[in-house]
Length: 381
Image (cartoon, rainbow, N blue to C red; front, side, top):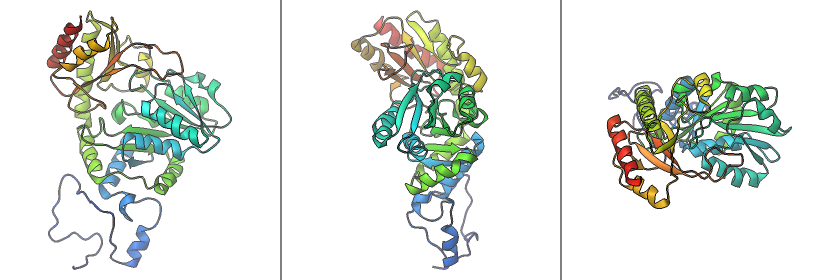
């Protein structure tokens, strides 16, 4: 097979809107000098399959620019990104602070794995702000926020938390999946690291597992070293899907936001509903923080019924729904609903012993959504 000079286009090469997918473990080199160039650090995606691929590099570059961070790295899933960050920035003897409303698997990993290897894990009130200083210890190394929480939607005063720890060597992390980079710019709020489950709004089709980590320049080298050491990477197909999704994110989010707010306001007026938990509603306890920190709202929120439903009533409510389907995750075209009963909180909790119905507003017509929920509510009255 004829060799070509690196960078020269193939005679039959054709240009496409989206980048090609490379499925490869082994990468070939035209010369020894090419190999030596590829083997230089930092990470570049051209040495071996586990170092990523061109489409992964393109996605990472786009997300870093969109979030305003120094650089981004992609992982197999959102939880994989979370685990990578928690391991990269802690070691035995460290103290880790996590908000009490974090994603359940984040809590499980911290309690079962970090603690197993000698990291002291402690939970913060889900509405923490400048009062975070009372939880800090000399060995506090990482402070992990999720604002809003993915099931109960409390918000933290992120800039106040960051200000309180800025004179200490504490890595501040924000799970920004709910708001996406379009509605929240974590690095403008002062955090060091931003995490996304790109499976959700970024990919947008409910067919992709992917996580991303974006860091500022101060923290990136430490993250990068760990990322390379444990050979984290993401599948080319997932990166390809997420890159396509990123290009339509603003259009999709505009619908998710508008439809979500219309359904949320309609639910607030429904006689069967006690509380709608949506950060963009004036009734939300941390609405002032949402106004201050975010430029918009996604389509994920919850509501609680006036009468606590039995298991049989929850089944009657959910099983016959048409537009909303029972499912985990969010951010796709399909509207989803999931009942949540939170039982793992350390701090006092607003909705203890209550069933929260979490909605992910999809791309269907809003009138159909309201009819679907309304008819379901009528079944259990």
